[in-house]
Image (cartoon, rainbow, N blue to C red):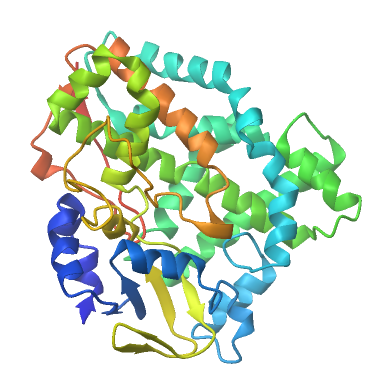
Length: 391
């Protein structure tokens, strides 16, 4: 048995390979006290969690959901991470056209311009907090422009998301923040209905108005997911990835010398740093035996993606950062029908961010001891609270 505080400690965040390497030796799955869920640790078992039809996303399929409040919330504001087909198929179809590789590639010039502008603002200073001044504003600007969110509202999102992903926050405050977030999105959708623009939110409002089975609450749930998933995980990719490169100067220099390595480097940084530590939850529709342990019907099950991505049975020399790695079927974006819709966008943002950082900031280095860095307080996500650097 494992306790949540072990899974979520600063030490585990700093050195996840040590903690999860020990868990993989025992194979699992492990029941995590405090999370009240089974967590798998191997690559093979992660695939089971991500693809087995006996595990459902939809709490409503269980007569006695473990958490009535969240079950009701899922019913009220459905989105892609809370439903199975056919609801999942319908919702994904309505938004997927905006996230195809072809559509995302059209954003490349704009993403490059945003990136260069952020570096223009700090270049002459010689230091910055890479999270607050680069890793956060880049993806939040991109997803906000894609959705058509006013610039003056974007700083509020960081405040909201940091509260409701912090597991030590009071539940009442988290519910209040989520309520404020949903109310804001509802108001913005009403504005788009009256004054539509050339943006994804206006398109989704239009779809809802034309009766394509997207209800107002489904619309709000989807926009909420796109805002949160569209920036929080990419912040972690850029922050964690930069730290990993700074701690592996040979790999940093290799990438600086050959920018053509960027696509493969981003894949390796996704694998090595795992911006998303745990998959989102599934629920067992029946009793399931896994390595001699019984997952009972209704039990919550998650895959430790961060552990699966460093499983030596799947990856050669798994604990080594190698930006030239060829075989790299990592699970950073999940697998199966719930594979991350925003993967093409995250990849493009990562390639653009790392390319610009190494090209424009010579002598980029940490400004503090890496052991002193603070990590976020959420077991699902692995991200830095700040990353002071000099250049």
